[in-house]
Image (cartoon, rainbow, N blue to C red):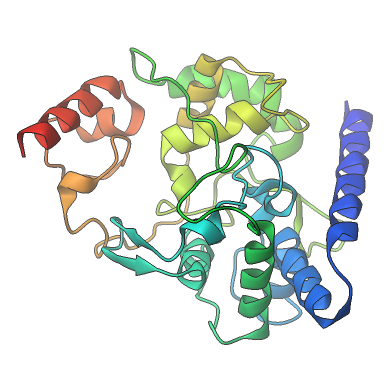
Length: 299
């Protein structure tokens, strides 16, 4: 099994090389390469042992945005430049690309914001803009973000998800979900899925609809959206299991000032509807979606 994983890592390296060759030469190309490097190997530069700063938890941006944001439906980044700046109901303001990056820095990487005037921020923005070159404004081309799953008619089951995790996930992420470091412990070969060094409870992946969709199209390692290895039910359940494990807390007191705008799977009360926090976290979601749709029509 381990041999297969190393083969997949090698093939992933070939994919990265092919992407690298598309980047133009010259100073502009150097900036794009640095931006790509920062997204692919964030911890090397900004992690606990970072060469530039010590801002993040040791995970890399591409642990979520696979293949440096280029994998189809692997939280692909090619739609970002076309859709930012945009109003974010969660924060109640208009976010730039830099603001979106810093949101990930604070939540998904459980760290501190990056100076928006820094070389690193400028390089990541340039790379994201390059990925989105040619994408029309306010459009989301095929392959961007993730493929959302159809809601189940019941709640996702963490206990069943643990069985999926032990069978399909622990070989990479460890029985205790703590991930696997590289040889010099500067970044993770396989990232932690819970615990002190994983994403916090303010991250987008802490919403089960997003995590289940990501898992279905990308996990176990080597999966693509064309060849999934898990059923929808397994994806829902393992997402519920992982997001039931302990992780850092993020102060979200300034989020969702308009609670009626909270997504169906936002896991923290208060809500504008009568559904419980447990149902908002684990489902079933369709009754909540129906109620929200009915309220929107009335207003």
